[in-house]
Image 1 (tube, rainbow, N blue to C red):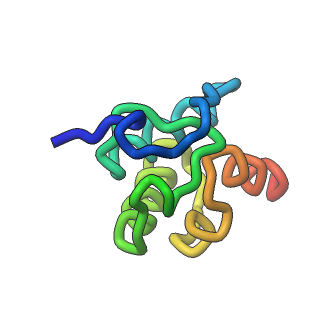
Image 2: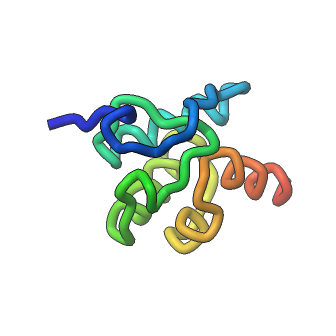
Length: 91
């Protein structure tokens, strides 16, 4: 059953993706976290993230974006925006 973002009690507004990479990454987070929507500033662990989900997300990023990301980077960055920034910094 899909969870709703509003039901998580995050207390922060949904910040929409501003570019195609953020859109893809937010969709991946939502898919594997089982949430209807993920904002680019939503924290991975606040959304119910755990290590196995981080691994699934890292594999999906490699498959859909062609970028190699370790599961530890997903958890360390914590948000779609910071993960996209880390990818961009690598070139």
